[in-house]
Structure formats: structure tokens, C-alpha cells
Length: 253
Image 1 (spheres, rainbow, N blue to C red):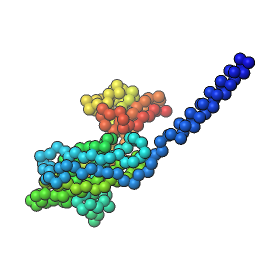
Image 2 (image 1 turned 90 degrees about the vertical axis):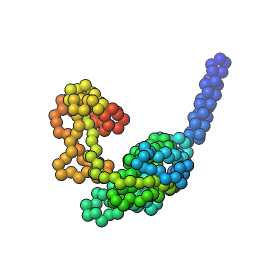
Image 3 (image 1 turned 30 degrees about the horizontal axis):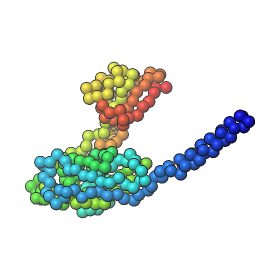
Image 4 (image 1 turned 120 degrees about the horizontal axis):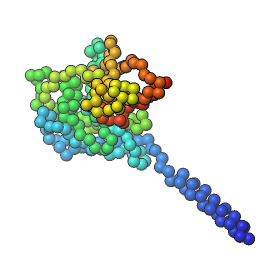
């Protein structure tokens, strides 16, 4: 009789466990696929923001309706005519010079639903779009902006808002090639130093390639490093000194 009661108890527990698992599956959030989201109109939108005197411009936006909180990445885009067809990067990298840009994606990436648009970066973007002459910069400039959200390699865009700035002439130059570094027990002094002070000792920069073309706005292109690594040697390839997040890890075979 005792064994029979124990068996019933185990059976009841099994039913409860199956039911709980079923409930968990039914309550699991489902990732939605929104097509847009909201960029808020800043309170200062009607004012004239002097870019030469400003450090940055604050923006906020809502998280797209993915169905639950997610770690999306956001960027801001600016335009002078509210068109987003040809980027400044595409236009600048057209050697013929015939491609005309109508927007720029600013390089800063945000992980929250807010961010500061760097005034210096915005000034450079407006210079690339408007091509101001040094002696003929308008007193004010209307700017359109929108945000983009990237999640799982899918990109969606917000509504567009406007704000006004006092622009100024910017002497533009091509971006330096985007650099990555090597650090490890078989690189440099082998001490795994990943900070600016370690560049050239523990942290060794990779090399640009002769004849390689590098993006004039972002600096992206092919870089390389040729050397012999001992068997079992471990190293990493970080992008930014002091940051272990964006990097590759490897082991010599």
C-alpha cells in the first residue's frame, strides 16, 4: 500500500511537471518584426543650434515593438532633403565623382534608446552633403534626421524629424584606415597589454596593404599581418585598445 501511494505521488508530480513545462512554452515571448519605430522630436527642434559652439545634440527614441526588451543597436542618419537613397560613403567612393549623396549614417553606435549626436561629426556630415564653400556658408540649415535599429542583421528605420543648426565650414579629409591590433603570449612582449600605452610593445598594429582601397568616410578596408607563430601560441585581434569586446580570438596550430 505504501509503495502504491508513493507511485501515485510520483505520477502526480510528473503530470504537474509536464503541465508547468507546457505553460512555460506557451508564455515564452515571441520576437515580433516591426517595420518602424518612433524618433522623438527634440524640444530644441525650432531653435538654431550653433554647431561651432556645441558639443552634441541629444536624441531619444522608443524601442521598436520587438515584443520584449532586446539588445538592439541604433544609429542616426541625417539628410538635407529627407531622402535616404545614396549615402555619402557610396558617393565618396565612386571614383568618377558622378554619384551625389543625399544622406549620411553617423558612425556612433548606441545601445540605449537615447544618444548624443556629436556636433563635430554632424558638421562634417553636412559639409559632405551640402559641399559648403568656405566663403558661402548659410546662416542656418534645416536638417532631417532619423534613427535606425539593427537586430539579428535586420534593419528598420524610424520616422524623420527636423531641427535647425547654424553650420560652419569644415575642411574635410579622408578617414584614416580602420586599424586592428594583435595581442597575445606570442605577440610583442607577450604580456597581453591591451591599452594605448601598450601599442608597439604588447599591442601590435596590423598593416594596411599597398594598393588597397580604403573607404574614405569609415576607413574600412583590408589590413594584414604576416609573421610566424609558435605552435599553441594564443593571441587576440582587438579593434580598440582597452576594449576586449570587439575582437577575434585565435590559436596557432
